[in-house]
Structure formats: C-alpha cells, structure tokens
Image (cartoon, rainbow, N blue to C red; front, side):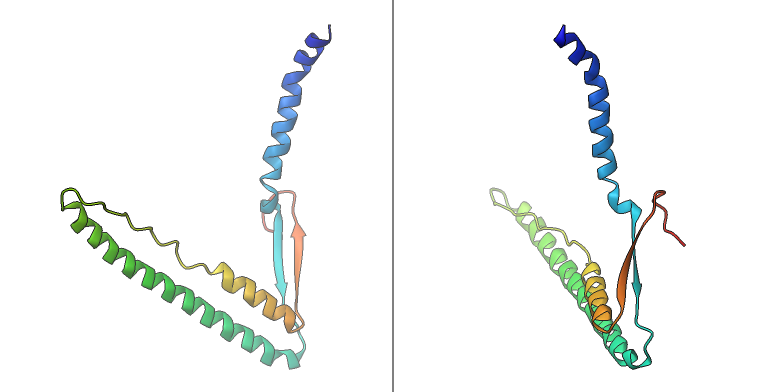
Length: 131
C-alpha cells in the first residue's frame, strides 16, 4: 500500500520542487539597489573624484573593447587566409565580450560609500522597480 501512496503524491512533490526552483531563479528581479550619495557639502570634492574615476574607467573599458574588435578583425582576416590554404590547421578567433561597465559601477558605488554615501536594497513582490 505504501508504494501507491508515494506514487499518488509524486506529482505534487514534483510541482512543489519545480515551483521552488523557478522562484529562486527570479530572486534578483525583485531586488533594487539605490545609491544615496552624501548630502554634506564637504563631501562634494570626494564625489567629484568618484565621478572622474568612473568616467576614466568607462573610457578604459571602451578602449579595451575597441582594441579587441580591431584584433578580432585582424584575426578573422588571418583565419580567412588560413582556410584558403589546403591542409592548414586554423584557429577561429574568440569574439569580444563587450565593454563591461559593471566594473565601473561597482567601483563608483564603493567610492561614493567611502565618501559617506550608502547603498540601500529594496525588495518588491512585483519585480517592477519601486518608485
């Protein structure tokens, strides 16, 4: 009799496990971070330094991406020449990943917090940004 009880509950257990797994994958959708810079007038010079560092970081990321694209174009041309040569072992170049501005955002947030600001995390049940 026990196997029939287990088999009757199996679909419900499976549905429960799948629901938990599906909802855990969506946790970040419900989290919103808000950067609150310090309002102290003396912190303005510190914040200006954070802005400058962020601008420089973004410039470096764009420059890295531009360089990567140039190298990718050259390696793709080399690949085409290699493929035209019978019997050659040719390597396909890796594509560029794009400029990663998240690094700059993290550094900026850390800088602002160092100036006296703070980062608040809010949770929403709808997944839409709160106002």
